[in-house]
Length: 260
Ligand SMILES: [Zn+2]
Ligand SMILES: [Zn+2]
Image (cartoon, rainbow, N blue to C red; front, side, top):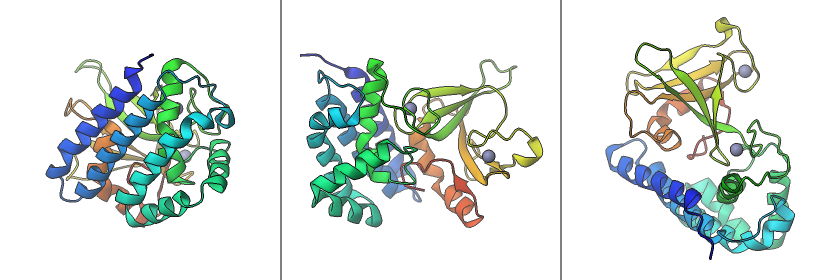
């Protein structure tokens, strides 16, 4: 039996971080508890795919995915925020057309804004492919490995005297990519006057890096403040900043785990 501890372990670490943060955060306790369970069920999906022959072509790989997919969907139907739970429940009851919806999502821009459920259901699959070095069919997003969308950013200073390096995390396969210059990851805008950043005294390590040209933004977390931070999980703690940004007319490049 082939074991593939990589992706399954990564989901386990994220689940632990979400479970540890949940009791500390009044505003984000529910999304963090939901995220912890979602990561566990996605980790089981990664484990279920270990040793299965996967091609990266969804239509060919679906027979291996169908059962673990149903488990992810069942979890969201039972524990997700109300609108997501209702959608997952509706899809659980009709299996055949839904595979068409998954296919349509996979062949589009692979954004959780278009279909949160499809992203959650195919995330473990994409991470297993990435860990094996199997290139999936071409997707419409910016990730060089899987065609997914960047859902979080972070900054890390290589040494105290040097400037911080910036990274983007892929929402689908988990790939990290370095961002060389200051620019909007969505549209490439480089004019600093069009790239405002928003901060909140409640979340000093968090910055919303916005772009006035495309009205989108990336949430970025400074990792030099706290080494325990797992960016895509800690993202949820400052969910109030995303709600503020939405009110102000900004759209996140790719929604985080809470769906905003
Ligand atoms: Zn990716
Ligand atoms: Zn832009």
